[in-house]
Length: 239
Image (cartoon, rainbow, N blue to C red):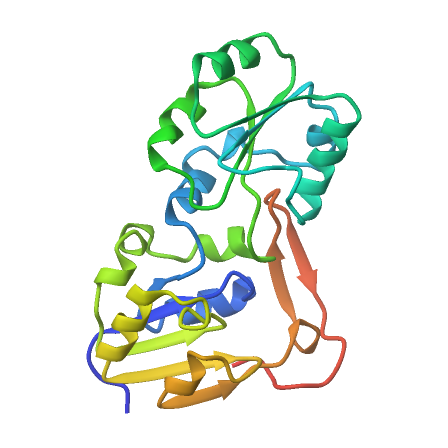
């Protein structure tokens, strides 16, 4: 029986419908979604890149705390192709005077922020006249972010709860020491995943999930566009 306060950790590969349902079970948090990036989705949505064409047509690409030469997502590969075909490229860790000058001299600059970047740079990025791309670690990172308690997400590893519901995330498997301590102190743990992860092995209850092709619902891609997912094969039904 689930009692006491409940933290619900939601993976960025959950559908919007799953995230909405799960967010009603307790405090909605995430181990894998950067709360700083998630807050930027809503506070500066007008600055976000909305299509591949904006990346392709950029005359300047500034990568902050990331490297487009090593990214594997389609937006990052699009940026890499643009750089290889002549688009000016700067790789930095903060907004310097060189970055400010380059952006001012460009007609269609794009700034790419890496995962878990320094939050102190956001005010400087917001002031630049440039489009911003925040590559998503999971297919529905941007969609799930809408349902999270972002303020508490910033301290999610320091907010113990009696019950933890961990949906599609494996923090122990990623050797997250703080998460391991949080989990070890919980009284009751529920884990839902497609396989028996390291986190699932310490759970009191494990719920099997089907792969993405077994479910239906909607995702919100990195450009903010909603995409419908139709069930393709039989598997475990959505909870």
